Image 1: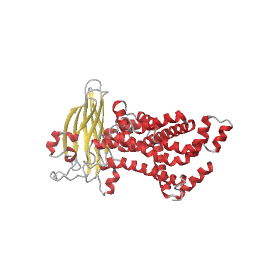
Image 2: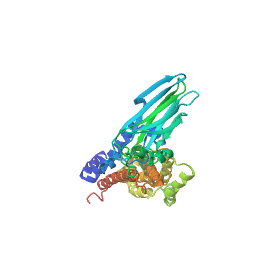
Image 3: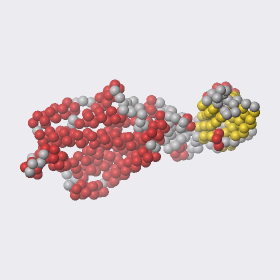
Image 4: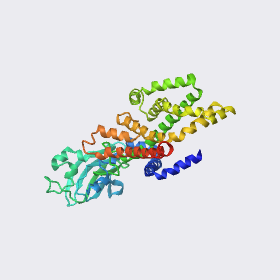
Length: 444
């Protein structure tokens, strides 16, 4: 048996499709292993659910490489931290004044997508007061007003309607534009600065400031409408998809094969009951049942996996396996095993099932992407796991936000491409395995 396996695997080298398929599968497995170690599960959930990193990402930013291939120079995000900026402090009785200069160089021909200032004040009773001003490369100073800081506050400069009326443009354009180009704004390249002048009314009070100049491109996969880096979902979607497909394929194939072999060996009422259950189960629609479970009970990926395996036990494969196992039951070596006293379990697991395993390997391999697509389809219908970042969840969010209508093609194409590569890799390998292990196709 081992010689047959090694000979069959050696023959795979003759099929270019098998080599390409194994290469694609190896890349997906390598990406899965790298993802698990590079972005631990708990960290991935924090990145996907939100947190401090979200607020520093632009909204609906396209991938950097897409813009570079198109020959553009769209800006990337810049985060100017007050802890690394020039700070001046002058004490007075009962408090002190603090001046933070958040300066940055801007050389892109396109304007940023947004401007936000994040303030973090620590005090006992009386809130600090801050006054903001914007300094341009040509020496102009634009006052942005003042406000009290009650804790961790966000100043949405881009949504300051008073400032927009004064500038005649949205703030993130008007503040960075040349002064004489308001009808057709042109970026004023050079060093811009946001100056935060604060009055702290307590000696122990503190104030930190960070300026986010959001770009229009971000990372290798872009961002979505919630500022989430789509690369997190694309990377973690790989091990989730492969694990779901592999576990579902293994669970359904092994249980179905054992049940079919048990029915063939014992025959009689045992085989009849198995066949009637199979015929009833065949007419049950899998997808509507999963939709019903997700709607009425739970959308957990583990619950869905359990339902898929449960419904796949008495599948149509039982009848195929039964037809293959019936001649084996009458084989001489099975009669010899029964004669020397081998038990039922030994005969089924040791002498019957291994004889048809080589023929079933191609079916098993091509079954894996079927379940991968099933999980993605459920997520696309809004029945995906609400916690895990998966390819289907990314496509569901894109559909809900009309990504294609708004031109965010990357949002849909990236997970769709990974799904197609997964299906292509397993399909090419499965078809090659079928030609190697199936005697009827070996000479075709």
